[in-house]
Length: 237
Image (cartoon, rainbow, N blue to C red):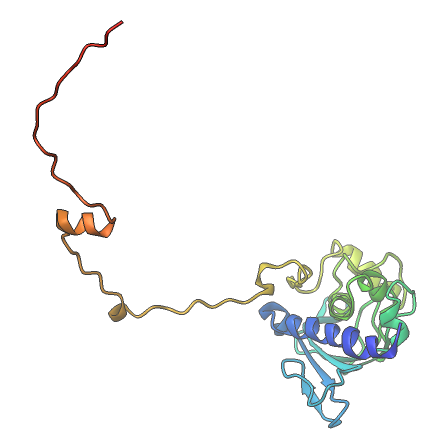
């Protein structure tokens, strides 16, 4: 696979899908995604395209959601940021166990068996998301923070006490977030806003059409039959 395909197709498609993800209202309540513009070097929202032809390789994902910081201790104003670095080997071989490079920073230590203050179990998140790409990976990391069962593997991992507490809570997530996991198949993939017609432009004027006009409109000419005598001549054998 050529580097041009990676630059012009793979990175561009990943950006398009991440931008669509950010447009989801439920997702946007908890996650904000920005990127490093490779031309200007500025950090920009994914809702705005790059300033040049090169699409981003580095994304900054800020998660803002309630988290447990101890048994029964829920912190509602928590923030954490994951920096995701893409590369050609990752995007050209998504089925590889080696996912994007991720660094993570949280303002405090979480009571979570997959997340520390300065690290997150990105390998497990990539195993769930790799068939779909970076947009799904961003969701998977958020789901680990939120302790959603679909992405949380069994076992204590980072914190055995946090894992036991998750089991006691019936493996329920911290917050009931409706992640847009159906992004690729949703009917809003193509947005269409019909333009409302103005009432003043719609005028219906009834018209009575005469028989002559009807005949002309369908190009039928009426001819008066000539009156005459009808003779019947029997056929001779």
